[in-house]
Length: 242
Image (tube, rainbow, N blue to C red; front, side):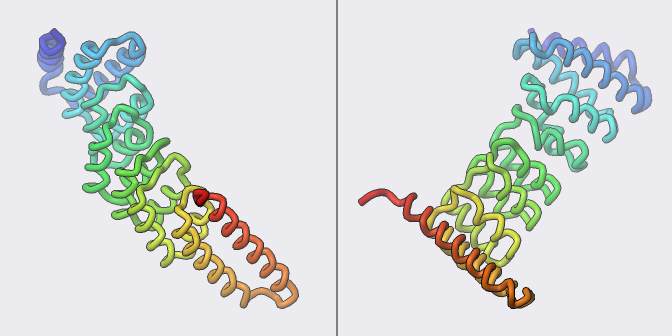
């Protein structure tokens, strides 16, 4: 029934505005979006599917500006049409894709992994900002992302990493002082990898001392030693009792 209803509505829309300008299609998309948002919390999946079909057809005729507005309006809605959200997420224009990649709960994990494999740095940055990033997704982001993506991911407390993902992330952090400084602060870094990071960060800090006046060097060295001792204590506490 939903398919019949959406087909009839699409036919009526196309008959009414066939040949009109993109601006007219964009206005219809805005009006339909307002209608959807007004009732979104009361619609069942069949009714949402009707909107989904019509949205997809309207999106074919709308320009990037209209799609960006549409994306912003629907990306945070828990009942947003799934196929429309997926199409927005794959869009080349980050102003269109970004809000959905960052906020939408209607995207499936496999969609996000596919996008992480196929799109560029801007799309990866938006995915890295999601409230939750599962290990299978973070693995792809670590593999393909540049420094900005890795930094965003490290600072995201909702990101989880597999053992292999963490190993790859630490390997990259050991070549980047800034990443190492950020990563060593995460409490879920495996103990063996944390020790590698502590050694790296301590070395970086010691080298930085060369530019510090001698009067301050002893105090800074003491602070570094205290930090390293604290990290070793955390490692011992995290090990299972024998």
